Amino acid sequence: MRRPRLHHALPALVTVLCAPMVVLGAASQAGAASGDSVQLPVIPSRLASGASCTGGSDTVAEAVPWEQQNLQLARSRRFGTGAGVTVAVVDTGVSLKAPALAGRVTALGGAGDDCVGHGTFVAGLIAAAPVDGVGFSGAARQAHVVAVRGTDERGAATDATVAAGISAAVDAGAKVIAVSPALTQTSSRLHDAVSYAARLDALIVAAAVPDAARDGTPSAPPPGDYWPAAESGVLSVVDVDVRGQRPQGAYTPRHADLAAPGDGVMSVGPSGQGHFIGSGASLAAGYAAAAAAMVRSAHPGLSAAETARRLITTAYPAGVPRLDPYGALTTVPGASPEPAAQAGGSRPVRLETDEAGARATRRALLSAGAGAGLLLVVTWAAVAVPKGRARRWRPAGNEASPPD
Image (cartoon, rainbow, N blue to C red):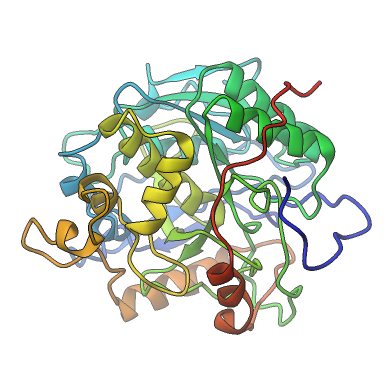
């Protein structure tokens, strides 16, 4: 059964993945912990008409990025690596030319080519191979990625392309499905695709909102629902910055299940050994999908719904619970997550404050955004939190027939 909507959907289907961005040099927080300053190009979510395909990056960032430190990935991988779990990335494709993903990706149809580079970036967050002398690698780096094109070749998504991508991912045997597009309206085919995934025990982890450009535009839409994240049974994720706050310019959903790092995070591009920087809820969803793969590899008896509940209930308490992979992997069922998370002698994961790094990233992203952007100044607690507290996460309905 679908969750009741608080407001009517917008009258026309609007495709929203992210406002166009140009690949420009941007200050990265990749070296914040070590005091290094690294300039990385920005990964786009969508290409403007006539724009060239995203190339490779010439810059390799050697330090462990802030987001992976805050997620305690080095610690978490001792308990779950994603081994034996197939994760689908429904996005712009995943480049088979990306060295860090060599041998780790199966592409469906034309999804092995990624002109935009965004899907490759997300796949890198999940499963990029470790490289000597480089601090970055995929969170669930022993997971296998299935590349599914959920957009056109330029990054534009519709309900039809996303629904087809989800169904193809399920048919390919994915047990975790990361969905980057966030649409302003749902449809029966999208609902059916989500239900089909639930029937085959595949957990969909989706961006709760579109990735927003950050160019200082002082206007934004009111909080709203975006799909497929707003469908019942989908784990919806928003992005937070290095301080654990929603970044400037971010869209606001009416509800989100989890928050995860997504502002100024680092990953790989469609070619070359270098790194890119990116921002948006789609990247936060990538990290949450990786955590789901880690949990499903460590606890193979858990269903998709149980995996989602485990991620939520072991998350760090906040208005929107913050993803804690270590807690999800180590918490004893039925016990409070805090003691288990502290078993290693440290406190549960927190998104630490780094005021200088946060300011640097914010300036970099403001300078890098090239399309029309939206700046949101909305009190999260007044809108999203009441709905989140009132809602209970539940699996999708049993409409299980594969969509046409």
